[in-house]
Length: 368
Image (cartoon, rainbow, N blue to C red):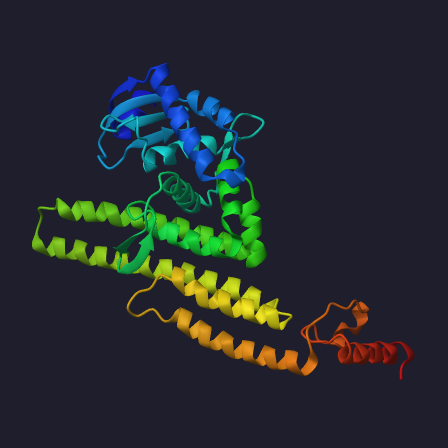
């Protein structure tokens, strides 16, 4: 399959190669913005400039007027919309350049990873797109805006591109902080995955990634169907059928999105609750659970967060009573054989319960 056919399939026409002067200006612009926006990563601006300036860059007429740039990793080239002001690179153009930066190759020269997206397992595409879009939006200093997608109301720094995926990602970095995400997105490593997994589980991370991929696919299918309906000139019966399909797809997207949000709430806060060992831990847990509402994405009939909040606060109250009764938890190493005698969840204080534990071990050894 010829490259001309591929480019035409991507909606690229009237392609013209940029000269070295324009390429260097773009490379300088983007490398400066990335270094200024993410100082905690200690990026080397000179290295970034050299790397980006080696890209083949073109201008092209694009069939998708909303696109400002497209990156073709198989050709190691980026295509800018002819209408784009190259002196003021926008979010989508930076988005595509980040894709180039995050490429990771194996020893055979085959690309195996793009940031959070593993090309071998084919998992993490949507999560990576959201991460790249989030970083690009921060780089261009986008402002938060309220939007509604598929009946879901949310505030987003990227209201036009991947808003649902970015909303989920913001909930994930509520627990991890931003550094692991930025690091893994640009350098294609497992720091973000490992950090989030430590706050929940690796199974939870993979399940969120898979559901986000399904969400992105469902959004693409819905967009294609909506476009088909907008130009449909057949019978009213057929049109009604297509509209019904569209409504079903929108409902599916809403349910899938909320299921991901609920999974994050359940796995992360349950893990945090299980690690409570002191009154200070309780205070931190309560504040964290309460403040999460600022990131919560809702629909008119959404109830999961409130239900979870009420249920786990009852458990918190019970745990507080246990700490009052027995004292704060300490870690004590005891013979493995005594685990059947002492439940793992038993709370022990520094004084009274430690003495009780010694008595149990003594009785086990001497048979008293």
